[in-house]
Amino acid sequence: MRILLLGADGYLGWPLALELTKKNCEVFAVDNGFKRDMCASLKINPLICIKDFLTRSSVLQATCKASFQALDVDLSNWENVNTLFLEYGPFDTVYQLAEQPSAPFSMISGSTSLKTLSNNVSITNNVLFAMATHCPDAHLIHIGTMGEYGTPNIDIEEGWLDIKHKGKSDRFLFPRQAGSVYHTSKIMTTDLIWFAVRNWGLSATELMQGPVYGLLSDLDDKNDVGQNHYYYDEIFGTVLNRFVAQAVANHPLTVYGKGEQKRGFINIIDSIQCLMLAMQQPAERGQLRIFNQITETFSVMQLAQKVQRAARAFDFRVRIERTENPRVESEDHYYNPKYSDLKKLGLVPTPLTDNALSQMFNSIMRHRSSIDVSKFRMRVSWK
Ligand SMILES: NC(=O)c1ccc[n+]([C@@H]2O[C@H](COP(=O)([O-])OP(=O)(O)OC[C@H]3O[C@@H](n4cnc5c(N)ncnc54)[C@H](O)[C@@H]3O)[C@@H](O)[C@H]2O)c1
Image 1 (tube, rainbow, N blue to C red):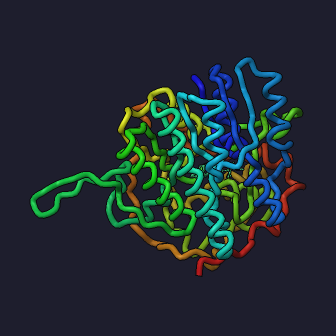
Image 2: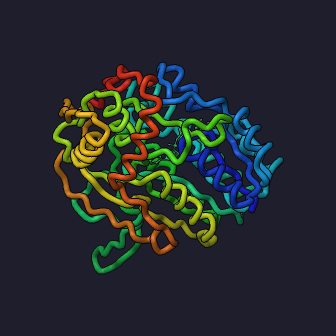
Image 3: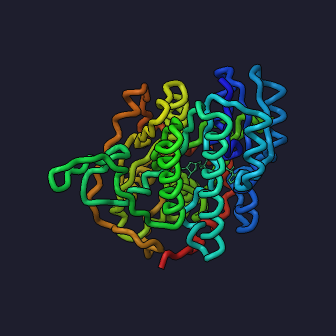
């Protein structure tokens, strides 16, 4: 399999690259350090600093048996993407993971909002046109987010909704109602993909993912290949990763508002499993296949309580602190998403057990002295 992996230096992209090379795929991995540049501009560091993309890629290239090539390309530029497909294509699978992935980042200012919209929408646009032009048989796998659906007062189906209206019926994308500019950019990319599937008969899988947690890496790997980025700050840290770092730093677990906001979550182990399963069992030509990529749902308060309990086993007695909610979101709502279709593809879920949390604690504790507590509250407001 010839695989184009976009966003390969990322939290999900790098472990996916490792998994693909283990399965002997021929991987063309692309990243231009967009995320590292954003972090530098906000003076945010991940828990451990990892060597730059091309350096760690060269170590992987030298040590893995599969063919692996790393390319530093800005994918928001059409000419770059066109050339990429011309020079290295055709591909069997195109993974599109290269996006600005943070809702708070998109809400800082008009400039960060524009950066999010223009980057995310233009990359998917470029990829779709390049696929239609150079390799229309390739299978596109894109990660959407559960946040695109918002919190409607009806069950959330897997991507589609059958509607009956005045005696007639049809199938539409499940209604979207985003809570941030970032999520709005994801809705736009879903719409672009659906347009390309309808118009050019491309084959696409959209994975509507919830916040990911966990490590799937050895933070102490000496040659950096097995390491992964772990963000715990308010801008790039997902909620559970943030809570574990807060607990380890003996900082209160900061819950926004009532904490009754419910979401679907997934361990990074399962996120990579789903990305592999989607590649191994592709969508048909002319099909946009959508999966809800979560394995469990919790309220934010339930997550905080789980972390508080797991922390006690390590002698951390952290309190839970309700803080003013900087976001505009419903704090008390119905939430019943469907998420059974990935299991039919073969996903074996990894539940959020005390044991899974203990493993996270063990890894993060070794880097406790690197945690910068000032980054827990950067106070990005939606209002
Ligand atoms: N991590 C999560 O919890 C989560 C949840 C839901 C959805 N997602 C989605 O999954 C995807 C991957 O997320 P992630 O957490 O790995 O994000 P990430 O920021 O760690 O990785 C994205 C990578 O894309 C690269 N990139 C961005 N713009 C680029 C450009 N113009 N040219 C080249 N490279 C570029 C970045 O440098 C980064 O390394 C994103 O689409 C995100 O929206 C993530």
